[in-house]
Structure formats: C-alpha cells, structure tokens
Image (cartoon, rainbow, N blue to C red):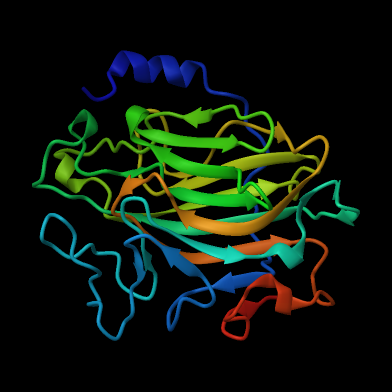
Length: 284
C-alpha cells in the first residue's frame, strides 16, 4: 500500500535541519542535447531522441502512448545509461596520483512518465518512477559511484557515496503526489543535483527539485541526506553518468550541467573524451 497518514506525520516530525540551498550557477559546461548526443555515449537499449525521427511528444512507452517528455534528450529505460569521460577535469577531492582534484556540481533534469492505465507496479504506483535511475559520478579505475537516484521501494530518493562510507541517505515518499487519481501523477520534469565540495568545502550534498506536493514535502528544492564528508583520503571521479545500469524506469534525461573549480580555461579538453566538445556551451 501507499504511505499512510500516520507515517507521513512521523516523517515530518523527524525531518532534519535545513542547510544552505542548492547550487544555482554559474555553470562551466552545459549540454542541451537538442541537436546531438554532444559526446555522451549510451549503453543498453536507451538512445538519444533525435528530433529527426522521434515525435515532438516523445518516444512511445509501454502504455502505447508518447511519453510527453519531448525529444532532443536521452530516453534511458531499464538498465541503460549515458556516460561522458571527464578524466582530464580532475573532479574529486584531495590528491590522487600526485594530481590535485577539484570540487564540482553536477546537475541533470529527469522526466518521470505516468504509465496508467497499466498496473502491477510497486505500491500500485502509476509506473516505474525513476527506480535506481538518476545521476552518478564514477571513480576512475573501479567505477564506484557517488549517486542520487530514485527508489520505488519507499517512493523516494536515495543518495550514496560508494567510494568510501557506502551509506544510504534517503528522502522517502517525496516521489508520491497528493492529487487523485494517480493517473494525474508525474508526467513532469524533476532536477537532480550532486554538490561535491562547492557550496560547503569538504562536504557533499544531494538536492532534488520536485515540482509537486508529496505527503511529506511541498513542491520545491529538497535536500537528501544532509551534509556529508567528501572522501577523507582523496578521490578522482573520471566519468559523468545519467540513467542507471540496474534501473527500472522509462525516464528521460536532459540539460546536463557541470560546474568545476578552478575554471578549466587552461586545461586540455582533448583528454576529456568530449568528442562533441565544440557542441556544448561553456559559461563564463
């Protein structure tokens, strides 16, 4: 069953203290995907929704209807993901291999479709949500992830840094809506953000913009898991990723943004794996 009113009240009473808000810009790099994948590589059965052949209403989903998420973005259903090599930007913390690593913010918009009249989903939700799908940054070498993803088992969002403490930080039930019937849920874009040492030096935070009221929150920016320490002995993140290798979803992804300090004006971009380096915008 879905969240009860008693549980909702308990969660509200135990909500954590507020912290500084999410990062809002400027951005060092932006990718809008309007005309190409812009250097990102898709693995699995997902694809870039080419406006040349994907309808303006979006790809057709299992319910037989267009998604509503449009085109010029990535459709990354079950187990698929898009990845970008950013090794030469030296994202992370501390010193690894004699090279200083730099704090960053990574943000992506995610479209959550409603699949009614189909049924059979967890909690009888109107679709798969963005279960185990979201945004990740992957450690160079073993590809362990620092991530923010959906988790349908508690109807919420989960942040986790698998590079060292490997602890779930959750915000449960925020992916539920309060409107009825549930065929009116979702069919909207949310925004996911990972801040690794920018807003609060030495700390990471995870944020989500949710445009609806849930049983435990109002529409707006929500923090998932408070402030946590960055890797204490140093970490190098070599790849940005969206989607999820173990996901269960029909979500779309768009408008990826990255801020890194220091501004990499003098860095060699040729090693970043950005084959579309001239296609994305750099902000000053």
